[in-house]
Image (tube, rainbow over all chains, first blue to last red; front, side, top):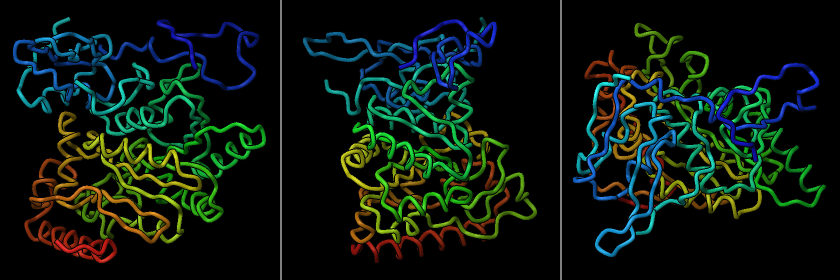
Length: 106
Length: 293
């Protein structure tokens, strides 16, 4: 399994390179959040914790956190803005319109 | 609450897919179903770019980039290697529609005829999207691509790869759609436990190539099933055809077509012809399934 690395690996010399073209690291260095024009924001007052947004996220940039609501275990979706490309699937598919959008300003 | 699909994410962040990519979503579901005991091989396709540059990889399972026409034969070779070592690993050939319908079909046909113990997944985005939307064998009738411009849209229907693979009498063959992840993961898990060549066709919309909005990816994949353009089926041993998603209220194909810029040039007559073709294809499929509705 590749190692996690938040920086892009560049080999200084041929001696640093592995003997085969193998993948050594994940793509975590590539912060695709900079591609985003529109920022999706989850309104947790409306959210029913159905996890449909998590299910259809192609990045995957929606993480799940286990929480308890009225004594029942539920999964709270949290958007990871480091990697969210702002494709819009989550706010189109949300059945209760709990995800609203803002123009990206950062 | 229980999640309807496995929670573990094997596919990593930061891959290079376009916004709203159906192929990235297909890979995410596929890895959830296959698990970490998987080795993949990619021919030239979108995923050979999405995966990222060396030494980085977004897939997080061992993978082998191979040449365009050799996805199935490379997978056969990898499987033979593991067999010699006495290891039981899922070997997956992961190809786009160009590498399956056109360029890779002889390798696929060979592997299917030998019944090599591999899983072949084709994510179907209906053109050569990676190189800039050129027409492929999978491009639908009257669709726009850069090589079939609006004045001369594609005049031939989409190749029926499901029937071609069914004719090889492989143990398992299924179609899936990214809009129905539960159905897709059930099929992928079922395929994982079967021995022999397994072929899975995943319908994965491509927003830039289809000139559609990225937020409509799931909507398009869903409409393709609901309009009967892309039926979800399973075929066992090439003989037993099963319909896995029964559509109660069928929608007209125009609803599916109007969301896509590649069909913007169609006249009402053209849409009627596409509707008629879809109905005919459905009847032929129903004869094979042996159901009437």
